[in-house]
Amino acid sequence: MALSTGKEIRELSADERLKRLRDLKQETMNLRLQRSAGTLENPARFKQVRREIAQILTIHNEQA
Image 1 (cartoon, rainbow, N blue to C red):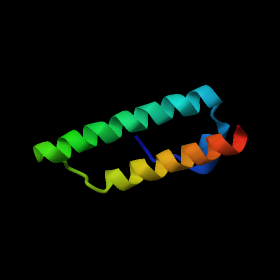
Image 2: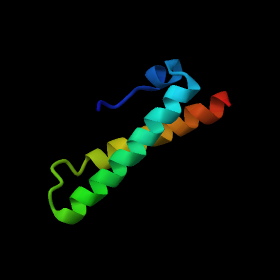
Image 3: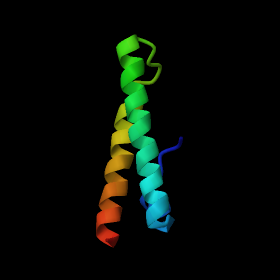
Image 4: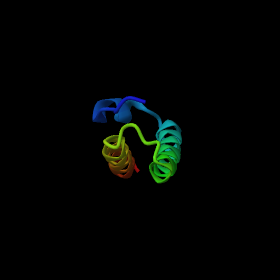
């Protein structure tokens, strides 16, 4: 999944943002499992996922 921009996130509905947030949290869990198993290919993806989660939460709180 590509990193979303703030503009793209703002265009999503509240339900779509929450679904994307759930997907990203699931991806974080999968990345942790890969790291513990030693099969993680892209460790930088952690930072990308955390950043996108923060963007979604920030925009969600702005619009709430």
